[in-house]
Image (cartoon, rainbow, N blue to C red; front, side, top):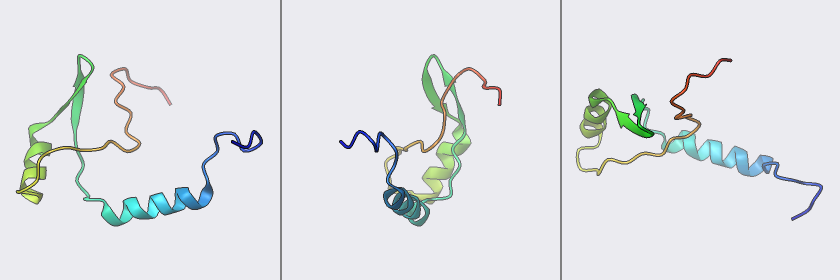
Length: 74
């Protein structure tokens, strides 16, 4: 790796990734809480996924979602 570049994201790759996320996003907002270090989704979130995707198995990827059980001050 070029030591001058460090770990900065490639702007073109970042833009392409953002475009792809926009194209494939579902628009579903998952809500829930962290209990004993595990994410527990609210039943309403699970029901919405089931309604929108009746033949799908339930799984998700959290993008830019901090699952920190401690509140953060900004």
